[in-house]
Length: 558
Length: 81
Image (cartoon, rainbow over all chains, first blue to last red; front, side, top):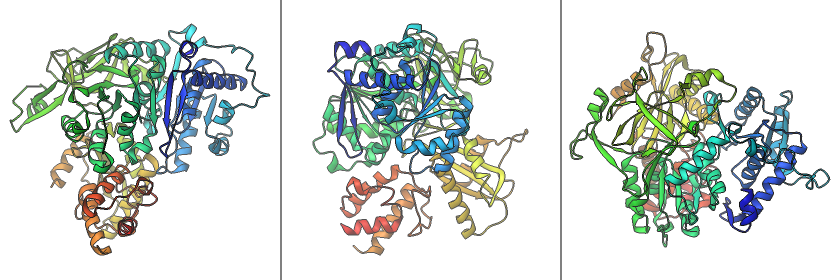
């Protein structure tokens, strides 16, 4: 980054598209200068090497430069999702406090408006709270610009195993797991992944992806900046509300690469009005990489149908299987070949755990899209319950190891020991290999993925347990595929504490939905109230989520 | 176009397509998005539905949770033209 700023200072680094549609740009030199300023400021506030710095900031260029500045002095930055209009501020603040306290963060950096409430919240936790304005635009008297940074680039010189940054999952459960990524892994990922997608100087990356998630953080931030490829960025909120922005940004900037969760294909195909597409030219878009939740063949087809008339090419359809634990990409589809799709016997897959190809016209045929091959330096295997490798076409758990792995979950050796065994990371995802290509069919854990975001059912159930009218301990949450949306929806089934009439259950449902959205931003796809003892539990008294899902489908399906 | 007709059509679309519960009785003043009944992706889809059903184009600054949270709000906006 420093070299680029020196040798190609005027090259475009970043175009940031604001809410009102206007954009402003930063050259490599400007980005670097801003990051260095941030680095100096942080040092002046006594933030040192290996100090954890949590960034509670909205999607903005300030977030990017502050993050880079923190890395530059060898501190460990971690981006925490910013408060949104749907979340309950009180609950959100408690989460921030819990994270900061648990992780022993040295400092929290936030927007100026948020600094006072955050300082009050964190009084007694013993961490510094800084406004982004103080960090990026320091008072001249405080800045010691002339002095060289005492730890300048130390992170890079030590290189290898020093932790570069942390990534967190969201939610009460997910917050516990800060994925610690060493510099070595990040650089290996960037190197291998660039090769896998033939990244070159003509590329322009366009993204709306949130930066607290591995896809947005790596593909939509660190990769382009390190590789010297321009990045066009917009906020996820602006995109959700106005999805045509992405397509017009690709048109305006001749974007070539864009990563998207599966539901985004459906969302764009269904939510953009015809008159908003007039004149659109998507011919420059060489790769649309589907990543971060199960890939669906029909979502690709809907998207292709809608946008082929505007220059979107079928050859652009690509996939990637990724996770923070491998920095980002584990596998990537081959970009020079059409995306492989297998039609397999679905009932046989579910009952015998084997993928058997059959003609697409057969009623029991289901399309499974390939997620590609492992990137250089990463290997994968499919194993059974005992960790023994399975032959091709046999379903099992996907495990991985390689040069882009996490060093562990930050300060959680217990969680690390559970997840990494004998050097292999156990993903909890289920799939099979066929002719070297990875096909993913499901998940071992009860984790639900909605619009690319991980949701833990236990977090939702805990909320339901607190709602008056719902029998505590007798509420279950599970995911259900919604084909129209191209993603999972969340269903909750709750036993009533006492018999209730329609009006009463409606009030309980309102209260439940309101609490769920305030605490997790999740909108439930369906809520059903049932009588006592409807919910199934295992012999050890735990909620049998898939059994309850099956019962729900049996009882309530139209 | 009258307000009753517009509301009925909106209710049918929202209950059937977005809520997946065609029989659900949506209150005229029920906060749909902030109340957790439909998610924010649905705003853009409502925009598409309104264009197709009533030939009304709602510009982006008006397609917000604050302005389009209830049936009454959406219907009023449609009738504005």
